Length: 210
Length: 78
Image (cartoon, each protein chain N blue to C red):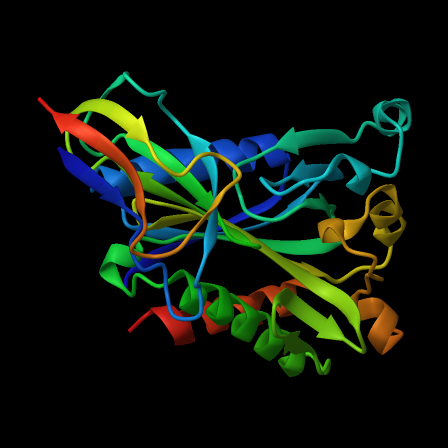
């Protein structure tokens, strides 16, 4: 499958969301090919279709004071946090041209995360029925997708820098009583997000560009 | 009448929750319109309308489980 690779750098969630939706429409109308968007976001909380009220631990006032918006979106999953210390990847892929299998797609995203972290010295693993990637029972990466007309939206995020990890305390991530971790906490050193990004791109090319 | 059937979503996905109907019973729909959204734990999936017509019956309602092959609703074709 052919796909464009687009580096959006540090971008507001809302703008990236608009770009995803635009590319989705263009793919649906056969105007543009599939695309892999890579980016980081200013602090934001997103709320998926399965979100529960009790998953938000912070008050709306506190979020307003911190300038952190909540976006309700159509992806699967509960609440999650995105921030500049994460690498986020949005594969807007036309699975009509590849394999129409949501389970395969989710497992492929896990595989890409785990191999990218492995190449950077972190041994992460997948846990059956707990989609994402984990290191010693702490979650290091999250996945949430939407599939419309067999075209995917949303994607994955990998926690890398430790600077904004405290913002996960604003929510119950994925609606679970779990602890989040990041690459810098595991390796006890500064991590170059660019290095992880290149491995993530390699992973997508390995799995999907056939 | 055209049946709206939940297709196979992939190996290992044995059920999904009907999370959102984009139309109410009696409303007109066009072929390929987003008709109904289903959710698994980490994915949502939109099923497009298989034809143009009127959504006459919703059989599996929002919040209820569905399995691949289940009849979700009925459309009376134009």
